[in-house]
Length: 335
Image (cartoon, rainbow, N blue to C red; front, side, top):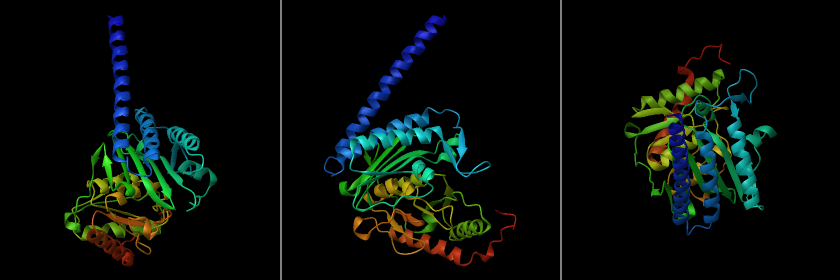
């Protein structure tokens, strides 16, 4: 009986491995097809293969990942072995395949203690090996692999893999579109807050001033009778969900530690730009979804929405909340 069960298990494992290989081959086939006319077709194939491999590593951790804390004992900013292993895999492969390209990775930047500049003169890969690490650590299946390419300092290619859902997003403005598992995607078309699902994030902001701002902006958006306000814990996932219409808009960056970094923006922005999503800054000029207006991947804040009208409405509500945040009282015990 035991021998029969072992044989059955072994056969199932072989079948599963064959399925995974076939699935990977099919994914790379459609990536090659949809980006055939893009100048970044080769880069897209390499990035997609890496994203799928990194995603398999995320799925392989069944009950949540053990972590150490970048901000010390008792901290809230985690890194896991999977983050580090994924980043090594991606970095080593990209260096071998594209020796003239630069690479910016989240974990390498954390080790340096700074965010490297991205030179417009060098094509630069921007990598987040696990975006949504806090979710990953707690076993919440909302974490993605994000691999983006900046050309001329502007996001030109995005590959994002949501491992738990087995969803691969690929987009490039030069290809004229973005795709989810081979199907072309588009925003939902919402133009006003009462018809919109809006996502946001609190990041690692825990100061009294930051909490006050976060509460005030949420209150302002809710006061506009938004259909739904959600926090998913992954900036990159929120961006691609705006691109495919699962979210109507996303905003973040109201204080210091909820401000995204280049690895949060690059791949997601490229995918959003490819489907015409509008980006606005909370703290300055418009971020337009095309290379001509000089998108800055070091931007600390943004509203992105499927339509310009909704982007303006969200931005107005958030800025209104920030201007009148005195209505929100935060206990002085906050850090």
